[in-house]
Image (cartoon, rainbow, N blue to C red; front, side):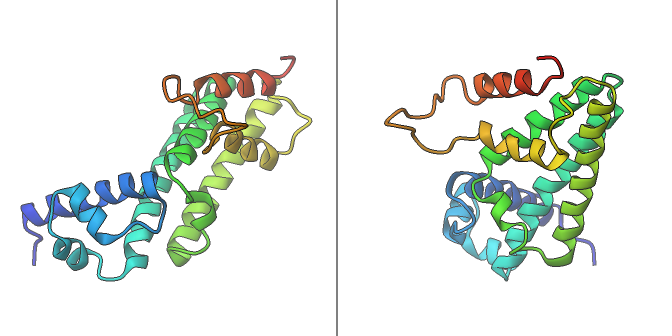
Length: 185
């Protein structure tokens, strides 16, 4: 039986709202908050995702699919540095926008999320090693270390009383990190 157009639209709204709510409040966000964000009744959220783990898996799958697409785009760049910068920035921004994402990958989604995570790691390794092989990215770091550095651009709280600069986002930190990762930089 085909899914009604309004039901498809509501499902997309719920998933988008869940992504925004998880980004703002972490994976512990309530169905009521998601429903309010989506502009639907809480019953709509429960009908679409009767199990909380299903909803969190759908959110994670959506985010990972976006990052996998970014990694493919990075590999298709002629310039290895441009591709690396695209992936590094995409990972840093998505990590910053999705509170608790990295820590939740093993807890939600089961084998499907594990496969997406594995795929993203493999693609990321290829992007990083390509930039290193072409002499554009420092070779003294393992690809895993380079990925860990994406978290450095995502400072969540204040440091010594200094709140994060919302006016400039993560750009200044990303620029410094990318400059430091560039071979010969």
